[in-house]
Length: 309
Image: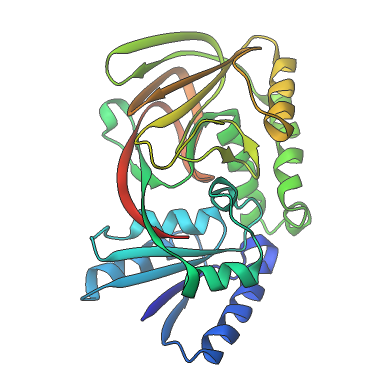
């Protein structure tokens, strides 16, 4: 039995179109399935939890939507050894698809998820908010960030919730346009990171810090060129500079070329990361809003996510 969790509004309505194509394939092949459509944030998380708590035996869940839908499914599910996940991309950014080097073609994605895919044990991340990690706890698949990148994600989500379909129809370009708006208002913050509880690095002008399982975020910005979902590590990118124009150069390079350690950009690798800033900054997991925080902890959970791709 296949369990589909579908976000019909993903990609400004593309989720429903992709699901209709998937349904035709399922019916043609006489494949048994159950489907659940999300209506609001949190629905995919609740449904994934319900399925994995109540269904006995192997479970295969397929998310149809963007990175946010996949995030909710994996965050909500009970990660048993007989639970596996697949996905059919239908979002605006689809950074998981890019990170795995897969085609975003609906036809290929359907076949991959339902017949040609293979299960591989990959890493995922866990974000804990609040000093000592006593606040909210969220899993993530692609990346988690704090600062400018998260503020862009918050603005994108705000546009969706307000029904501003104009900017959302621009797809990945919507991230760039929203980024320009956030660039104008963003202010550097002081703070530090602690790597694996052993190395502390201080920064005077933090614009953003992102921790990655996969290289891309924000609809194709390659902030972590070395990220590998099989190495058991987080790939961390810190952009800290008093010159905001350097942030523009960082974004342009991350969009079109390999990002390098210069112009206020630094890379780190670790299994666990703690971040402290002197004022609350926006936080996200896979583009999903995690409010504003001064303290977060992020860790990599190696090889425990059974993903079909």
